[in-house]
Every structure is written in structure tokens, then in C-alpha cells.
Image (cartoon, rainbow, N blue to C red; front, side, top):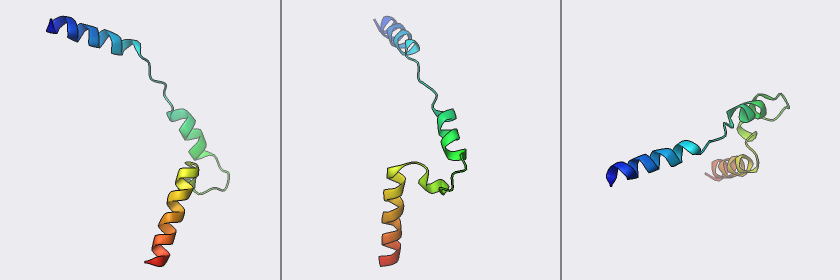
Length: 59
């Protein structure tokens, strides 16, 4: 029973393939477009940056 379960688990996980997104992210972060690296991640980075600056000024 346990042997069959382990073989089934290994065989199903081996079929799934994860796409490597690192080269895409490297292109985005290495692009020279005048945007600071801490804001190149998108809207989420912008919101975090603005909240951090607001807390810094208010603190």
C-alpha cells in the first residue's frame, strides 16, 4: 500500500513542469529605463514604497 502510494506521488509530480521565470525577471530588472530597481516590480512595489515613505515622514 505505502509503496504504491509513494510511486504514484512521485510519478504524478514528475509530469508537472514548472516554467522558469527567472530570465524574464532578469530582463525587467536589468533594463535601463530610468526606473529605480526598488520600483521595477510593478504596482505592488510602488504601493509599498509610498507606504514606507509615508510612515517614515509621519514617524
